[in-house]
Image 1 (cartoon, rainbow over the protein chains, first blue to last red):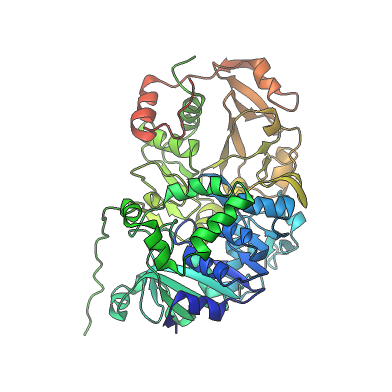
Image 2: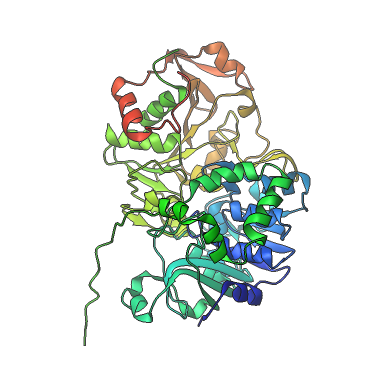
Length: 304
Length: 255
């Protein structure tokens, strides 16, 4: 079961130099606050992992935290390319970055194998692509039932996964809605899990709708109450994606100097997410507030 | 000067490729607009899927990325990525997939990985994302791209997503489903012949044969009777400008 704590403690106790770190999410619920804490704590030589490395991974790479990246799409979603990622791959700035590259389906299948303790899983992709030539983890496997050969990938088991959800009880059982991406697979595949929630709620809230519990407390090590911790990405029903920040990053990341300045201002010179949110200001957050659209409640029935 | 932008024509032409009842794996930009245009005109029962795991999306405003919250609210279903890829795409439940890329060759093989050598790239591109599995498992794929010579080389630097590989037979041997159906550019609509090679079917009113050939890195085949691409109708333009992209985020620009 997870232990309720603060972000500094959770990251300090789980993320060590050289670890494989999966900060999960597909555009939604991106653990920005956790990534910024990793930068503040000065972790090095990390093997970063995520299907969709975005601004946060660009920031971690620019800060010199990473030496390897397992991924399938490295872009600024809806905007363009990741400039710090490109500087690392094309020019070795600030350091070389070893790539371990898949397609989305290839990478999420690796996590699925990792989450269910299988030595490999076959899938229908990669045939005719040049990706297998450049990645020894993508191999042909013979069908034991004789129908056809397929490509297969091995499990991915990160040392640490940081995942987010809208609400969780103090032990880390979490309700997650909107686009789940590969969040749940990452939580089950990782050795250590930090669960960050927009809200910590009473266990009875979680038990009232058990079908919505995507992540059980039994796979969670640390639980952090972390409102707005996904900004500038979003939390469905809580706040929208701050598109302005994604557009601005394209300019900020254009040079090493402006990137470092940004990291100083928004990561090193704030102590935690609360200070970051205060710095952002209420007006900007109010603009990101959606109007409500409640789901119809379900009746679980009482069978006492 | 014309009454419409290149992108508006591409949206209209892409929409015409979609049939009522099709399940379509969509991307942002032209594919999203084409699907919404088709839904509002000839294909009301078209189903929109996103590789983020959203099924039956019904966005109330223009999504800026394929993972936007507006795609999830009011959708039929929202799934883990793995479920979307395995039970929908891999299982053969996707009729049409949209693809783009930095380079496309004459067999419709697409590169979205690197320009130059993989281990020492000139330009590092974002990578496959879901493109490789869409190209491998959708029943047909539509490729949307600007038409420039550097985008249409005789051979791509890296095959991220397979088209007809070395020809239709090559694709069949690999056990891949479907294949590319058409390439819609800002100059022409191209299709694939019996050998699996691209040829020009129609040329847009703003372009001519020479412009299309000059923007292609190999000797391009042309249909026996190359037609002119139908320009978008007034009603199509009204839907695009008033309903789908009122701020001209994707369809603006010079006419």
